[in-house]
Amino acid sequence: MGSEDRILLEGIQIPAALGVTAAERRSRRPVLLDVEVTRDLRDAGRTDSIRQTIHYKRIFEVVEDVAANHEHRLVEALGDRIARALLEKFDADAVTVTVRKPAPISGVLRHAGVRITRRRADLSK
Image (cartoon, rainbow, N blue to C red; front, side, top):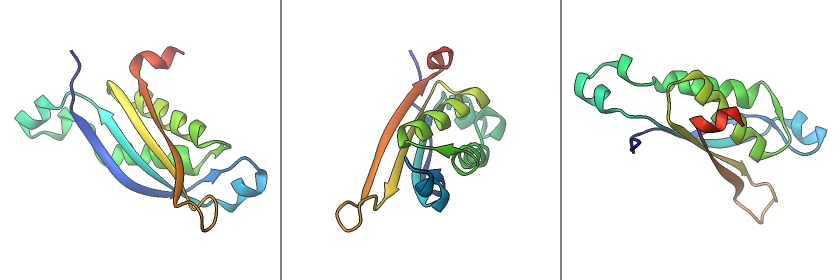
């Protein structure tokens, strides 16, 4: 049975080249991201050693690289790319990424977005 432990990074805000049109992608508006990395953290809790976990700064750096340094048409693509990059880089069982575009429709909608979960087995797909 897999672990229910999670490393959480919530409220990440990164300017991203995100949007269906080229004009949207050029404007580099901020996206809001939450990341949950599923991994057994019992050894980290017991030993109090950073070597037994995934340092959240390293997770942030991967998220920032994918979001800020690549173009994405859809929030679905951005979420999928972040999840896959984290699974490829770190020893995690699963990754859940929530992506929100603030005020995508002015005055009508606070956020629009997706929540994407990928597991290690998904890397081969």
